[in-house]
Structures are given as C-alpha cells and as structure tokens.
Amino acid sequence: MSRFQVRAASTAAVVVLLAWLAAANFFPADVRRASPLLPDAGLRLGLDLQGGIHWVLGVQLDAAVAHELDYVAGGIKSAAEDGDFAVGDVVARDGHVFVGVSGPQDAEKIEEWMGRRGGLEAVSSSSGQLELGLTSAWAKQVRERGMEQVLEVLRRRIDDPVTGIPESVVTRQGEDRILVEIPGGQIERSRAREMLRVTGFLEFKIVQDQDKTEELLLARHGAKVPEGMEVAFEREKESNRILAAFLVNDKADLTGDFLTDARVQFDRMNRPTVGFTFNADGGKIFGKLTAENIGRQLAIVLDDRVYSGPVVRSQITMHGQIEGRFSVAEANDLAVVLRAGSLPVPVAIEEERLVGPTLGADSIARGFQASLLALGATLVFAVFYYRLSGVYASVALIANLVMLVGVMSLFEATLTMPGVAGIVLTVGMAIDANVIIFERIREELRGGKTPRAAIHTGFNRAFWTIMDANLTTMITALVLYEYGTGPIKGFAVTLAIGLVTSVAAAMVVTRLLFDYYPGARPVESLSI
Image (tube, rainbow, N blue to C red; front, top):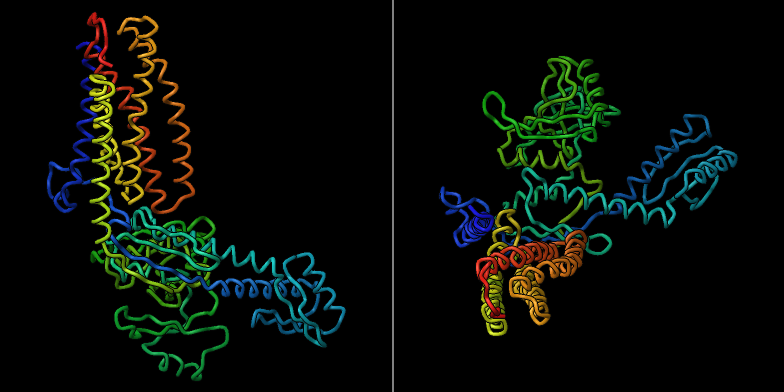
C-alpha cells in the first residue's frame, strides 16, 4: 500500500468508529445494553435537557461555631491541667465560653493564653467568672471553613467514582446555602436524600452492656445512665423500631477519621456488608483496642445509630467489616458516605423541586434544528464561494461533527443546553481552518506557484496560524471547565472537543481530499 492509502485507510477507520459511537445515541440506553452490535457508551443528558432533582441545602454554620467553642473550652482545660493557670468549671453555651476563675491573677493568665492562641476576646468579666467569645474575624473564618468542608464532602459523596452520581452539580449559593442538581433517572430520590442527610460521623465503642430495650438495660444500673456513658440504639430501618439498646462510653474509642477506604463486600451467606480499611495510625489504635477487648462486643455507630455490634474474636488491625441488614444499594451508599468522610455540620433541605423533561425535549429539538440550519448555511456558503474546494471543506465539516459527537459518546460526556450551543458554535468555527488554508493557497497561486506547490505551501504555512487561533480558545475552554459548574462545564467540554476535531478535520481530512485530487496530477488550475 502507498503512503496515501495507509493515511486514507486509517483516517476512514477512525471516522467510521466514531460515527458508530455517534449513531448509537439514536437508540435508547436499554437497547444499546441489550444489543451486542451497539456500544454501551453514549451521551448523557444534563438536568436542563432530561429533568431531575433540584435541591437548595441550608448549612447550619452555627454548629461550626459551637464546635469551635467546644474546642476552645477543651484547650482551656488542657492548659489548666498543664499548670498554666487554675480554672473552675469551663462551659461552652449560647455562643460563648464561661470560665470559672479564682482571682484576677488567673484571669490575666487566661487572657495572655488567649493572646497567644488568637481568635478570642473577653466579652465580660465578673468576680469568679470570665466570659469569652470568638472575634468576628475568627468566627467568619470558622463559618467559611465549615462551608468549604461541607462542599468538599458533598462533592465527594455525589461524585464518588464507584457509586456516585455522574454529572451532578454541587455548588455554593450565598453564605450558607448549597445548590445540588442531579439529572433524573440516575438515582432514586429517597436514596439521594439519605446521602445528603446523613452526617456520616463514624465511631467505634466497646459495649459495656446490652439489652432489648432501654428500660431493661437501665434497670441493671439504678434506672439511670452511669456517668461518662450513654445509650445507643440499633433500629430497624423502615419502621425505626428499636432492635437493641447498647450501653457505651460517651467518648468514642476510635472514629472514622482514620479510615482510608470502604467497599461493599459479601459474607459467607452472600449478604452485603461494608468492609473498611484504616490508615497506619488507625490500625495501631484499632489493634490495641481489639486486643484488649477480646470476647466483648464492639458497637459500630454511625450518626448515633448502631449498625452492628459484633463480638471481638481476635485482634484486628487494618481491616474490618460492618454488618447491618443492608440491601446492596444501602451498603453502596454507606460505603460512599464513609469514603467521603463526615459532614462537619448538619445540612437541611430548604427547597426541593423536580425538574420535568418537557422543556428539555423541546430544547433538544430546537438545538438540533439550529445545528442543521447552521450546518446547511455553512455548507452552501463553502460550496458557493470555494467551488470544489468548498465541497472538500463540507466533507471535512460533516466528518468534524461526526467525530465530535463520537468522541463525546466515547467518554460518556453530558450534553446540556449550553453544550448544544457549543455544537452550533463549533459548526460555525470549524470552517475557519479551511478558510485560512484556502486563502493561503490562493495567495500562493497569485504568486505564480503551481497548484501542487500552492497546496503544499498553503497547508504548511496555515498550520501554525490555525494552531495559535485554536490554542487560545482551548485555554478559554479549560478555564471555563475548571472554574465553571454544571452547564458551563458542558459548554466547555463541547467547545474543547470541537476544537480538536475541527483541527483534525481540516488538517487531515481536507488534506487527504486534495491529495486524492488533484494529487500528483499536472493540473493547470484549482477550483478554489
């Protein structure tokens, strides 16, 4: 085979493959999965085209301030234990920390400690008590940090690479609200609500006692909860009925902060469980905890609910399992929550809307019509103005569209309404590269070169001009993708892929057509 034939065959193979991927989008997803002749991949439709769930979440940032005050109270107690000063009761409540002091000398030492720590100010001082609060700047920083942590955890949960929800939107709205949009059909509404609602705070606690109900449990302890302990419950998921009551320490022996991974597994009875893995520090703590408590129950508590209370049979270090009468979907969701980490503060759904697909279908139809109109107008102009060379440009433009949709289908990109606009824009921009090439060839012909030499020089000299023009646009597309959300990302993806396919179509497909005719033939003129 000649070099031209190899190039033509490889180019045709790529275009045909991408055309096969693009054509698969005309078949429903269930038909694609059932047919061995069709690929599983295909374009996804965004929320604006197929509908879905729209939530506005309120983030309870006051809880972040309360957590910070608890941390401050703990710091004061630790400093007092180290002998820096003497204090009485230290209580965090109502947005302040109240510190009992024996005299002005201790109050001065506490204020010196506050100055070294930063972020605190004395609100009031009276005999025997010092009232502290966060400075406005520090409180603002605490709230901002809490908001960023909530955003990061929710994004990790919803965009989880294993069982997350592809192409969803999680973005900030104002100071204390988060917008979540999930395209329809990708997850059940109740499951999605549960993933957002669960705080995800995981604790491991050695069980001190257990019974079927709280009354029976406390009857053995003087009808009250012993100091330093609390009662945790295992509940039936559907009815919330109490299945068992556990007496455990109020402080966790180990938390989920040391987790590095969580995956769905199956036990010997083929029931779904959640296997977890600790990091090195967590493995040491867990190994020591289990070694010292062989034969006792270990309560695995998530958001104050006991998921399971297995008996420790031997020392466990890095790996463990959570059993809890799960379905496979529930086990998947729990694994996602554990991998993503716990929410630092609670969130609440303040607004919920179901976006219907009717507008989406109309938008798709109009976008398709606009694309066809733009394509038709561009083809007519190219053929009218550049004659046979315009036909070559038209073939390259059609190949460009086929490759664009094929590549998007290959990567299962999401098509949004701005993405449709990106396709229409690509149709208009794709002819630019051919125009640059054709005008350069015209200049070479006017300069007296032969058609073959003019074609060769025109393509070579136009290459860097085309690359420079598209590279600057590509940078814009990358910036839009990095900092944009939802539909903006959809537009950026379409634009970026369209730029690549446009250059490939102009520099490869159009060049092949010129190499076919006139090729090496000694023609006197070009139809350009």
